[in-house]
Image 1 (cartoon, rainbow, N blue to C red):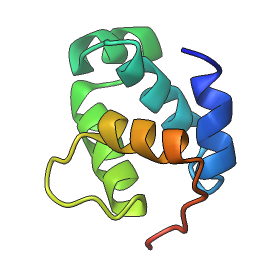
Image 2: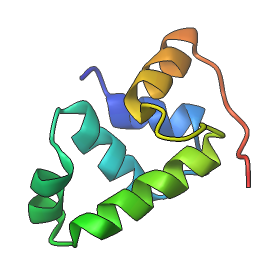
Image 3: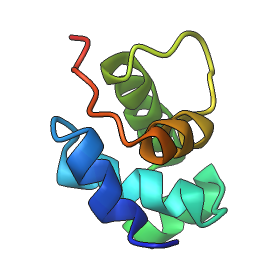
Image 4: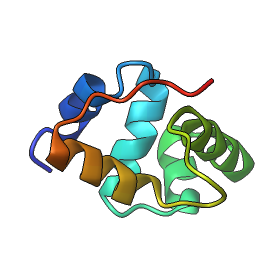
Length: 83
């Protein structure tokens, strides 16, 4: 995905390494169950991590994290954390 992880680091430097990994797996099309198997963590933990990412990105409700990241990466905008 054209260095998606590196672009996330550039545009959202406040995301942790694990949060960036989760975003990359979501971008690759993995669902929560598949990610939990890959990362060896509970699916509830995946949901909580996604909530924390949404909070940091100031996304409301269950907004799509990947659509948001794709948009800011395309626009090449550095975002500010919201926490």
